[in-house]
Image (cartoon, rainbow, N blue to C red; front, side):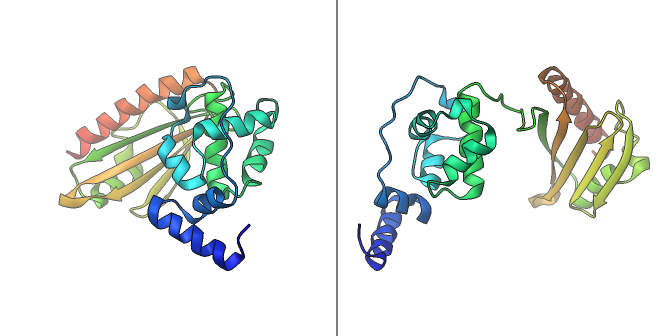
Length: 220
């Protein structure tokens, strides 16, 4: 094992050559990644490429699946899996991402399903209007009523020109976030959370496509 000063020099040298983060480069210098030994899996289910996860964590999906399988990951809960990944020097956010990818590839979680077994739908749309116009059409109750129907809103909260949160009487809620773009355009990104099943999530995908179409017609 090189001394601490030498180790940092070696790690930084590797970072320059590979473009890896400090955590990933250090992991590769100090402890080579294990050879993958696991049953087949579909990397496309992970929601993130091999290159991106290896650059950030020092291991690709084959290696992470091998690590978690060897630790009996399929028979542990989400928190235990995260602790296992984190114990290998992986930053907290990336530990979560690795475990979510593993759970999807091993059939323990479907895309769109959250840790608490509820579902979430995400959508985004670009509008040819300034940010202030788009935000007003969503945040103002009278304007919102012109394009939004189908769910009963029991509470609405907003941060000017940044976000709107709507809570519905079925216990679900949606967060809408607003971003300005060049040429007077703006973007909505939304996440509808606490959905009870995949069937409901699929219905909400269609629902939001329709509502965003109606909003676009209103502000255009």
